[in-house]
Image (cartoon, rainbow, N blue to C red):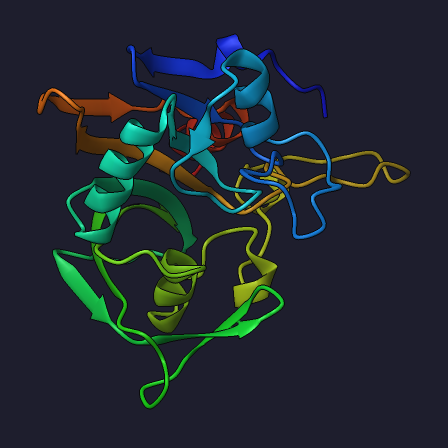
Length: 240
């Protein structure tokens, strides 16, 4: 993967804060050893020495991440996350047609460690997500996801409980999307193996709304990355 320049990822910046549109396959933070690959935190620190990432996205998830330029800004944003004052909207493409109209999934999530979570009503931590269907295709649905809490894999596992797995999310039984599965007459030569349209799960952190240090409301929309945009265009053309 070719890593873009940090400045090319910036979609908002003021004296205290930066918001970047994280590409897929780029980690938010260092791994536990601190010896990992290039990530958003390391890139941000090269751009601004005191930078701190205020929250994280899964490596495969693309979209908006808030970065603080100073400790005061970091505290300010962290408190808003803690008090659930940051409004977050994700977009996901799921397998099948689902009519979600202000559906609240309120199922506790237990972090089992090693990037595995489960629904556990006895020991899990409270987790709430609102879902609304945005666009219907013949075999897929574009869904708006509004997490109230911020548990690991929350949107992914909550959608899976509705039998609406995100495409490409093999951890939760989501299957990759192949053009041959919905484009009529699509054929490859026998010696060519077809590749999935997206080589990751289709989840994008689309919007963030929060307060800056001057109490102004900042509303951010992160454009879709190329792979997500191509998937939607192909579904629109061949699966509507």
